[in-house]
Amino acid sequence: MDELIPIGQFSALTWLSPKALRIYHDQGLLEPAHVDPSSGYRYYSADQISVAAGISMLRRAGIALAEIAEFLRAPSTDRVDVWRTALEVEVTERRRMLQHISRLTERNEVTAVPDSKTTTLQRAIPVLASLDLDATQHFYAERLGFDPLFCYPDYAISGRDGVQMHFWLTDDSDIPKNTSCRIDVTGIEALYEEMQTAGVVHPNAPLCEQPWGMKEFGVLDGDGNLIKFGERFVTADRTCALDAG
Image (tube, rainbow, N blue to C red; front, top):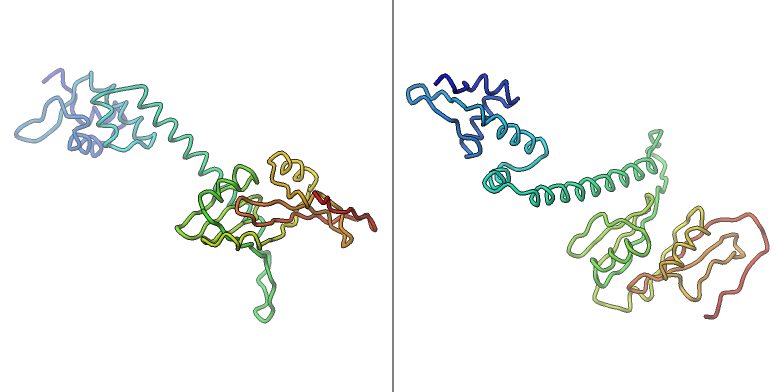
């Protein structure tokens, strides 16, 4: 019994509370070297300190007890790599979501309480038809730079720079071919280059200065919805003819 470490001392050595040690015992993760049959008091051996430290680190890394038990039965660096990859994916996705929420919040912050007797329109959100929501969100992510935010069985939402695009599911392929929306931007020349590289600029809607004072170009999404991007400019009386393409 002299070589054994009482649970209180073992707890101090491993930074694991006695309660946690009891849970790990019950879960089969770390069984005491000896349990006093009369008092039920738990004792541990010195070589169990490293095992306890490993369990503690895995728990702090967010690993579930069941997975830790499996790992202790067959330790593997491959398993650690799987956890690391999953964590990196989760952190990246959570960071992307938080950045998007931050942009939305910054865009929609209201500095004063509006008069209840007046009405102010805040923003408009395009709702476009989609023949396949997964394919639509993939297209908007890969070709237009919109992050997928939510996807339900018949409705999806993607966003970029605080602008949201909503999509509803349909099996009528003629609807998106007859649907369009408009998004005002800054830095339209850079965006035009980006969309040209992605190969989505409408052949009949290159970047032009329109007589109503807007630089505009259009893109087609995977289902045929037309999206026009525009930015106001100051030079007057300059237009260009659309390419008959």
